[in-house]
Image (spheres, rainbow over the protein chains, first blue to last red):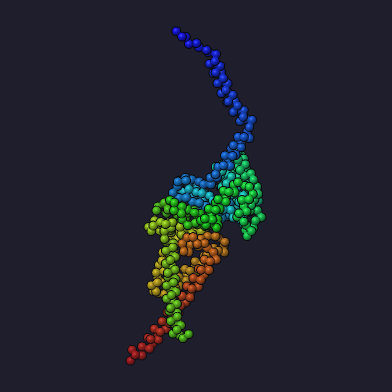
Amino acid sequence: MIRRTFHPLPVAALCELAVVAMLALFCGAGVSAQTHPRAQTHAVANSDAAAAPVKSLGNRNAPITMEVFSDYQCPSCGNFYENTLKYMIQDSVASGQVYFIHRDFPLPMHPYSYMAARWSNAAAKIGKFEVVDAALFDNQVAWSADGNIEKFVAAAVGPADFKRIKKLMEGCDVNPNAGVKPAAFNNSGQVDHGCLLDSYIEQDKQLAKQIPVTQTPTSVITYKGQRYPAMPGFVTWPILKQFFDSLMKQ
Amino acid sequence: MTAEGRTTFRRIFLLVGRLALGAMFLFAAYAKLKPQAAMPWSVGSVRTSLSMFAMQVDSYQMLSPGAVSLAAHSLPFVELAVGLWLLTGLWLRFSTSITTLLLAGFFALMVRTYSLGLEINCGCFGPGEQLGKKSLLRDGSLLAFSIAVTICAFLTRKKRGESVTSVSVASEPQRAN
């Protein structure tokens, strides 16, 4: 009869090794996280940079889509936001009837509009578009006077989010609209200064060209895939709501 | 030009003028009522077109939302009625006067909006036409044309009235006899 011999030592040693390895892995991860905080920040920043800015509100599958080509420094756009879009967001967007998309169309005659659009896009990249969009329009008169947009963005979001937004704004300190007179304005000249956010603004401007949009605010309404003619100018909320209702009754 | 030639010219001008203005008003009404975005003709699509026109009226920033809605939902039908009235040729002095008053009102509104610097759609012939120098020139020309047609309508009527009077005066002695 062959007796199987049991060797407890190697098994115990293996178990011990496994536990040590697990502990080492666990602790090592902790240590590397503690000793390399920058690496983690970079990972977050990189994911922020890669993310596309979401400048829309509401349900993507809503029957009505409303795109608004807007300039943050244009008084009429501010008026439109405060007296119409705010109510629309609370009512039709909240109820799932309307999907709202903000499109940037900074006009060259407004010196800080392009910078404001950059802040908005940076905020949109980290999912803070709604609050920053509101803050920019709510304080339009204040920052239009001195161009201090940062102050209002910081007040609208928490310190951690503001840090992320600031990180995304790196390389965006040169204001393309500053000192540029409308007649001398060159569209192609705006992307030559290394601000990564500008590509999103330029994309919106390209869309505007296709429609075509020439002024702000301009609303483009699509109902069940059918696009209605672009509507430039200010429209009051009751009249816009009446239009939405007539579309829904069709 | 002889007096008879002038009368003939006036009558032709009046005929062409009222037909042109009538057709223009009918087209303006059609452009506002026609379904947008490839929708078929239906009560719902016409209602949507009128609501879209209401947004254009609203962008002039002159009326309250209630008044905007009322104006937008009635103006295309007024234009339709005036267009048909001009085409029939009935009570021309009144129809051309109303046409001129309407065009003068539209033109004044456009001048005011343009001077305020509002960059909006004209809404004159449906959506998509920007209010600018071109549309102002066109509407100004139409107003001038309409005034000329109205004057012509009054002069022609006066002439007819005069001829009717002269005929009746000439026939009076016969009756007396």
